[in-house]
Amino acid sequence: MFQKKGPIDRFNLGRQLTRDANASVSDILARTSSAPPRTAIRIAMTGPPGTGKSTLINNLCRRHLEAGYRVGVLAVDPTSPFTSGAILGDRVRMENVCEHENFFIRSLATRGAHNGLADNTPELLMTMDCHEFDEVIVETVGVGQIECAVRDLVDTTVLVLNPACGDYIQAMKAWVLEAADIIVVNKADLPGAEKLRVALQSVIRVRQHPAQAWIAPVIKVSHEAGGGVAELDRLLSEHLQWRRSRLDPLERRRARRAYHLTTLVARRVSETIGRMSPEQLDAGLAEAFANLVDALR
Amino acid sequence: MFQKKGPIDRFNLGRQLTRDANASVSDILARTSSAPPRTAIRIAMTGPPGTGKSTLINNLCRRHLEAGYRVGVLAVDPTSPFTSGAILGDRVRMENVCEHENFFIRSLATRGAHNGLADNTPELLMTMDCHEFDEVIVETVGVGQIECAVRDLVDTTVLVLNPACGDYIQAMKAWVLEAADIIVVNKADLPGAEKLRVALQSVIRVRQHPAQAWIAPVIKVSHEAGGGVAELDRLLSEHLQWRRSRLDPLERRRARRAYHLTTLVARRVSETIGRMSPEQLDAGLAEAFANLVDALR
Image (cartoon, rainbow over all chains, first blue to last red; front, top):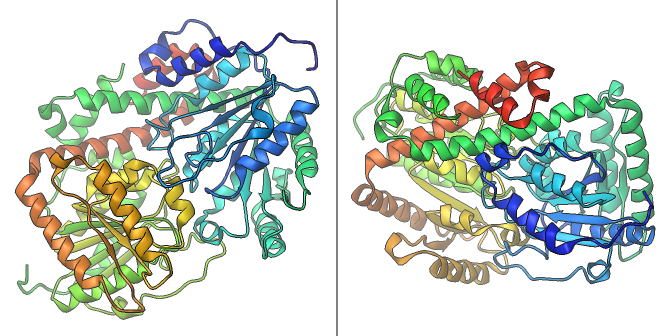
């Protein structure tokens, strides 16, 4: 993992990511190259807007860059300082790490991803693997859909909350918590952090099946007080080791493939419906369904 | 609309809604009855958790019940007091209207709707039409996906925000605003309400195309101060009139059909992938895609 690598080929990497982001379903299906061997550990950082994911990622990346890793970030969070999706949002900058020679970040428009699925994240992650990254962090946001979707693509999912997002926590369905491998109570200097940590911990303990073996730890991180990032780092390694010892890589690959196929069909459906004639659409439901399915190939 | 109707057949309506909610894709495609004529005006109330949608719906329903309408609510909001999805949430009650003979409410598990689509909302709305409702309000929550999805099924989409949900507004993509026909700044007694109203109004004015003709009004509603619900009511009627004069009903029906087909295929894909053999999944991407599509019928 620490062998000497050449510099990141930023020009070609950037161009390939743009090509991936714009690729149609047919483009993707026509690619003859098979998936490159997985090189990068993939971590998803997810949670509602404003919980401090960017700062957390910044601090984590800095540690890993100092340790000699090549680190990439794919930011699909519309509130991310790197993404232009925010309407009334301020922009800040990840100044600490952006200039590092082993760091690469790309923000992604979620253009087609209204349903939380129709995007080319699998292709983008494969492209990162072609460029010898040791770690890729996917930053994402949502009230559940996206967290759940991204889970099949990554090794570890970190859910980032903070004491100020009580409304989100109320809205959160159980499976959001269940999708998380590690839960961070961020901005732990805010009042209510310990109370939130204890509440989450108790929900996890009750809900998670004992046979599942990995019980998501809930930790507090405070960038003001400076604590918690080292512990997060330790837990990430621990979870990765646990995964390697427990999970069937073939089964994981199939889950990723299932996710990939689902997104491709969803996009193809949307393209196909756009081309269906009014008569085909107006037919009886079963007939219209058959018309659509026949046209998907 | 005000002709005398018999009492709501709560037993059969409830049973049919349960049947709809649990129906598989094959069940739905096998139904021979065609869609009933649309009777109910359909309104979506959407927005992030904790903005006071339930109170707003309560107040709106009370007005309409007093005016003699038969009103139904389908609550797909996991934070709704009627839904059991909340993890740490308190339950409150819509006491004002729940006992009314012309009122019916059903909370919906979003079980299969991780992608914001895979649910049977079209069937549930059709069933409401079979029971002579004059108005059906769909209460929903999300950071965009669901708002956008529900839009094709309803006549009017009301986006409910409040001055406390700044994080949400920062995360909100432009198309969330564009999907709204009316925007409510709720809890307008909170500080910052007027500032939020003005900010939203200016974004709408800039973004919306003049030829689109309907420019979503932004209004303040305060249940403390008691103002705004009558204005919301007036705007709902105005928007409905505008729709009737401008929009092609055939085109709308096709948009609903397209949405319906998309959700059905998404569910069928998920069922089909579960039945695919490891060999079928492990094939090259294009081949696995073809295998999947062939198996959808």
